[in-house]
Amino acid sequence: MTAQTQAHPEEDKAVLPGYSSLLLAVDSSDHANRGTLEAIGLATHFHARLTAAHVYAAKLHDARFRQMEGGLPEQFREEQELERQRDVHDDLITRGLSIITDSYLDQVETVAADRLPVERCSLEGKNYRELVNEANSGRYDLLVMGALGLGAVKGSRLGTVCQRVSRRSSIDTLIIKDPNCSLSDSPIVVGVDGSAKSYGGLLTALSLAKAWGSDVKVVSAFDPYYHYVAFNRIAGVLSEEAGKVFRFQEQEKLHEEIIDSGLAKIYQGHLSVAQSIAADHGMEVETVLLDGKPHEVINRYLNGNYSPLR
Image (cartoon, rainbow, N blue to C red; front, side, top):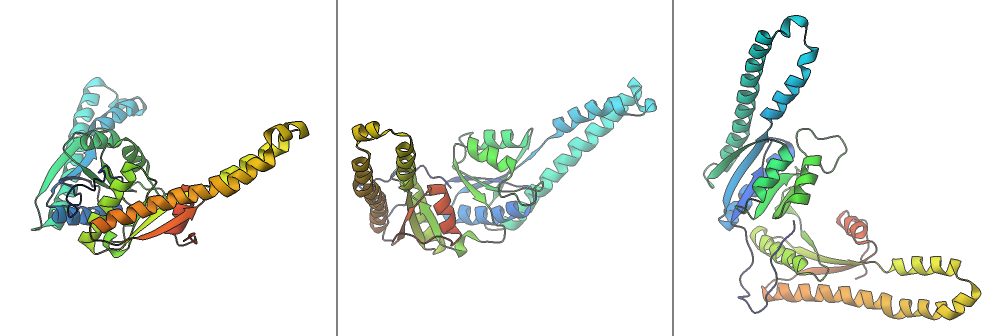
């Protein structure tokens, strides 16, 4: 989840960010069903408006049907018969897909029951485009969707619709990757890099942690190894004379003693700021400093396969 709230220490320290309007993408898949539970819980906690949306593609099916007309048996290719078949197909597809969409939205209303009202949103068109347009309409501040849908490919971790939507969505996006796990059952891990958005993500995590009674772990990752790789490659191509001009050994020592250790201090500083922000809101967080390619070491840490520096 990416948060856009920035930290302002001078503001009321008791106030944490929340959401006022949630958009939930549904298709009755396991991931979407877990998303429904989480969205209802979040909307209830934040007293937010919840809209459930499903996209169907009646026009696409109609276009595909017309493309297939040339392959129909001869008795079905007469214009009068074609028109009749088109009318039947259009009626079945349009009505059928609309009924399916209504059923998905009915399911969300049933799960929400008396907890909160659910607004319904039926969208027609290309799934990811319509969902992005709706999410970016200015009516929502959080999108909840499953990582995989009904057409999931075995072994995939993120479906094409989810990829396309998350890249184009201008609002915070909560992606459900494990349909069997409740978000409130485990600690919340936040990555910080000193940017305003990363600290905004921390504030959102603190807000959710208060709602769920969860622990918050803050990680910061830096990569000191690039310098070693770069210097070794440079050393392999420098002539003896060029090496003297470049003063390679002195440069390498400078990186080892100053730059690499300096990186660790900078990212440890990000963690200290995170602790301070949490303390301003009366909360404690655990901080973890990681070294290596950020995407790799953070993923290993999440899977329990990484020993942090401290």
